[in-house]
Length: 96
Image (cartoon, rainbow, N blue to C red; front, side, top):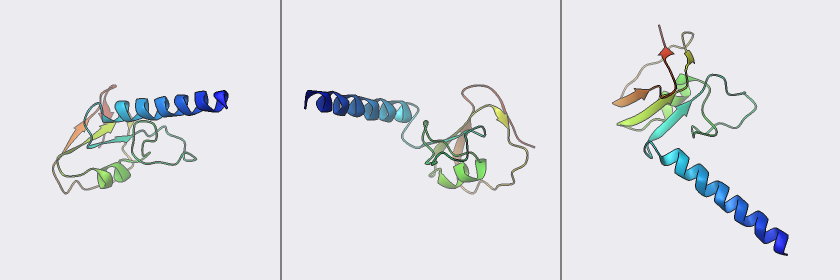
């Protein structure tokens, strides 16, 4: 029973840490990482980012933030139809 308690505590700490990291730049931030494997279930969080800008733009609320991992996003066509911030905290993002 004691081992189960330790595992539950570790899981709770992991969930709290993930939530804190995900909310750090603001609760309205959606993450995109082109290099994320397609097998991972995406939800736009820092640990499960979308792998396309189209998905990210669709998920960002008004005045939200789209955080893009460094990389080339030149094969996507998308329209931004509401105010949002585009940030690349770890380098440059290119789109043309």
